[in-house]
Amino acid sequence: MSPLAVGLMSGTSLDGVDAALVEIGGPDSVSLRAFRSTPYSDEQRSAIRAALAGGTARELALLHADLGAWFAAAALEVLELAGVAAGELSFVASHGQTVWHEPGRATMQLGDPATIAERTGVRVVSDFRSRDVAAGGQGAPLVPLADAMLFGAPRRGRALLNLGGMANVTWVPRRGDTDGVIAFDTGPGVAVLDAVTRLVDPAAAFDQGGERAARGAADDGLIEELLADPYFAAPPPKSTGREAFGDAYAADLVSRMRQRRAGALGDDCVATALELTVRSVAAGIERWLPADGERDLLVSGGGARNATLVASLQAALEAWSVRLFEEEFFDGDAKEAVAFAYLGWRATQGLTSNVPSATGARGPRVLGSITPA
Image (tube, rainbow, N blue to C red):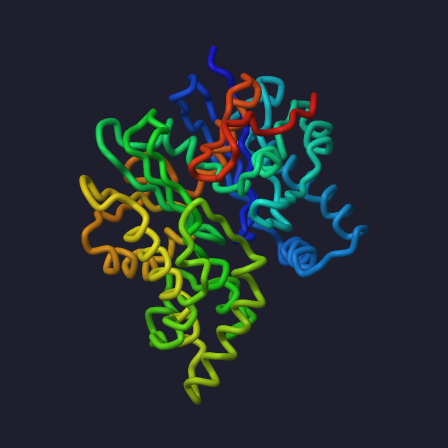
């Protein structure tokens, strides 16, 4: 019988906890049985943001325990949704909540696996990024192995773009083939866009459907200045996070926008943030991915629900067929939770999970630490 697992993901967008119940058929086969996304409350999100801004040791320790409890609750909720008992699970795979990511040097994800194991009664695979960093890698992106084994096209190339807080893209020559995989973070996904939206309207958590951006007028000159950041021109392997493209970056964008354009509206600021994401993603794809063959791009993540963002991306990538991940597979919001369930299974089997060409690690490594039930 194929093992069942729950994959848990809380990304840099800080939307909430994604929980996917996954049946794993082997190294090239998974099936999504159920999916549930539990949004963070305003209080929970504020606690995470406070830690990101520089939490004390006590605050980080308490958040570590709290996140473990929140993740455990999310796992139990998706099991209840599916009518599956926790005892039927082989493991829970928890990515954790990133609170610090310094590529090539250190990475930290909170969400106590012992708390998850204690509350669910199931063994937990966690801390996926640290071993890659210890092996000289960036610790990200880690989804490319799942992209290559599970979501590539059977007989041709395909790119997969995740628009989370940060945006990352994977090029897969063909499904099941990790040779020739190219993967990297292109830069901001929705983290800057969401932060700018909150700055111009504190009552709005994000730009629903891209309505504000559609009404605004982007400042092309400012976007060009922002795209001069060395990160965008750097070759892969590379990864980034909120340390570079977070709340402080968003505040600077709004400040510069208003200095350049007297009377700039909030919607103009949001439109500028959206176009920064679009142009940095498009530039990364056009510069670093193969220019020949099929140009098939599947988009997932929270940004895929922003119609203005997706339409602008299609316009910027005229030579590509830009489609939503769910048109080919399942709900794109579940993709990363499914991917980490798959990486968790590989850890339990002693199989390597990083793609050195994507992370820069010295070689393949088994990723993840196991906490017994």
